[in-house]
Picture 1 (cartoon, rainbow, N blue to C red):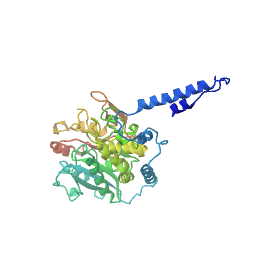
Picture 2: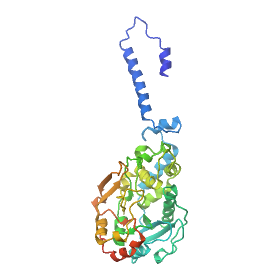
Picture 3: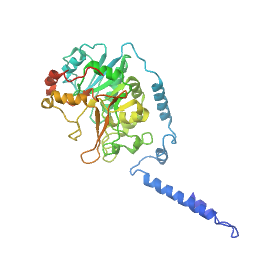
Length: 382
């Protein structure tokens, strides 16, 4: 277009003054060329989408024209968040266990639950084999399940199965996702008050600028999920009922992770769906409604793909006291050879409180030691 204008322009008559027009033409030409260079510099290396998609992908949300699906999702989320939560006479916490089979710490959980019947619900998603139970609290609590593969979208699918099963009970007001290696760190009363009276969901969401954080963002996720919105966090969440409903209502952002978050989809990026979907989703739709840290303690000091597993030899009253009283959350990024740590204080309704209600990963051989110590290391009041 610039070239066409340039060829058709014959210049002014010789007797006209050109001192104003020529500099203006030069300024416009330089400006256009500069914009072309800037856009070329900013464009991703491996984009395989149409030029129409790319032209809208780089625009901010308030400038880029939203699709019908995006408008619908935002409208639904906005209405759900504006609707006051329906508080029942008997609010309960739904404990959602995501496990391959039998729960090795069922006896410890039984001790945790006993005496508080009516204030909790239990749902178990066994992905490989039906568990053998030793506690009446867990009998017949299995839901319809399917195979789960670590790092795949099937992990998120299992979480959603647990949530939708628990949502059928209107008394379930808060939802806790746990693994077979998780243990409780406090008494049931303390945990109940901490969660039921919290003004946020405890979902970890932070920026990891390294290769296993923002580096996992796929260009295929554009334009709905921009690189600057991409977040990382632990999958072990606790969630208020409003947020659980929103997760079940979402299909747009979930579909992006289902299709484009997995090993080998783009170059050597190993996108782990359960580490990014909920942290990114809530960062985009309700960033002020989440804690940005998880109430489930893990130890990433070994800097491996999975956190440290604590055996019986690691467990002592001093160790448990340190974990249950920790008031600073730790987030490990993938920046540098050994990773960087991010720290910030844990605030419960604006007040500094211990960060963790649960902990993982624990080896089954630690059960007897934990049973002997529980509840000596727990707190009784928020």
